[in-house]
Image (cartoon, rainbow, N blue to C red; front, side):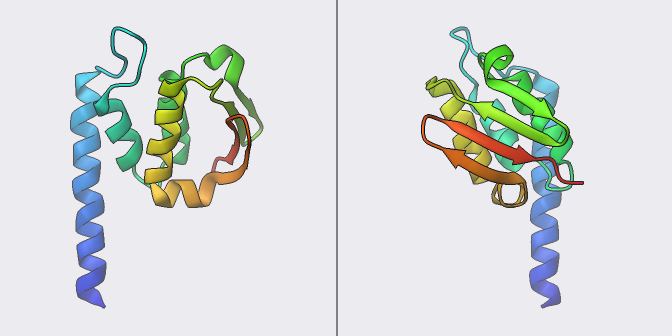
Length: 119
């Protein structure tokens, strides 16, 4: 059991280093306004103990954030607007299975999501 725990903790530490290195680059949106592979990788690997930072990073890279992104208290109401770049971000969020599992509240057809920031 200790070996498994050590392996998981080592993976999380490695992921955190990858995120930190990619954040230095700062190249998160391409010339057409789509999230880059670096941005999507950061979302996928974002540390599970920082949901607030995760949502800040995602909003900074969300197309149509003024229309499709609303925070009410600790809830985020997010709509993709059907835009494929935002759909890619949602897919990357789902690949971060810990943060998705603890923050996701609801999905509705048409690309509407509700999340709760967890402390």
